[in-house]
Image (cartoon, one colour):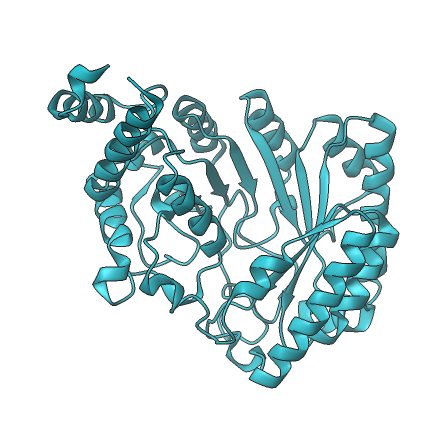
Amino acid sequence: MTEGLRRAWRRWRVERRLRSGGPLQGPEWVHVGIAEGCNYRCSWCRSHSRLLSSGGDQGELPRRLYDELLEDLRLLGTRLVEFAGLGEPLLRRDAVSMIRAAKEAGLRALLITNGSLLTPELCEELVDLGVDTVNVSLNAARDETHARIHDAPRGDWARIVEMVRYLRRARDRRGDGRPFLSISMVVERENYREILALAEQAVAVGVDHVFFAPLGVNPASAQLVLTREEDEEARGLVRAADAVLRAAGRRTNAAAFLDRPVDVYWTRDLFSHLPCHIGQLYSRIHGTGEVFPCAAARARGLGNLATMRFRDIWHSEAYRQFRREAVRLPRGGDRVEGCSCWTCGQHFLIKQYEERVRRGQVELQTKGLGCAAGRRSLANLVARSPWRAAG
């Protein structure tokens, strides 16, 4: 078979599976909420915001369910586990042990933390166990702003910055380049004028990357949305910050941030012509054990680890139905049921995946599918293929 025929065959298989809602492989990236409680009350947070009248989630994923999840992720071929949740993961006493277990299972580990619980001893532990990425949600360049938007004690900002600096020194002593260090800023009305100052501080501290996140729309964040004039000012500051960081050899996501429309619903136009592949890429697990297909799909629970193994949820009819709806999104003319498609934080990953599909770079994998139903489905697809005899 020529290379052109191989690519056409691969693309045909992949596109057919995408339309059917079946998984092409296991999720590349899984978000695990090991602890949903939080010691901060960030103003835009849909779970713990000080602007909300009700209290936020407090669940912790039972360790038994977590260990079973890791086993399934390893079999499914998942690459990355993100430790974050709806709160602060380091509030959990065995958080380091859980991260270590993920590393021992051959998975890459990303820790997202507000940084308030970091200590020199904990920093050394994270470096020693080989955490791949640590992202600190700093969100401000001044202590006063940090205290206001996080409802945090004054002085926390300076201590967190010092712990990021300590992490960099500990990494340099170890010498293997891990963890990759990132700080993030959710850009909103209370902090956007500090974008450039944050970039300059990031260079001084020695982080590798700065992530600028657009504000998600939820009941807590509505009053924090930038006006069009403020958004244009923020874009100019992000461009300037990107220049400062790149001149220092640092990385940013500025291109993706600037690529979004000047609109509260920044992905509405994008998904008028782009199918959503998040159901192939990603899965989100809350501390309750509930599995969701997307960070924006909090009303679309697909199963619970207390009653089903993750590998069975991944291959379930509920997950297939979500994938079918998502891939039809441009033709459907409306959001996927239970999902906030018009404020999608994963849109840049979905765009990259669609480009890989178009180029024939996405494979339909047999190894690690993880359940008998998935293997039978793949065998049936190959048996029905008009290309079957061409190999």
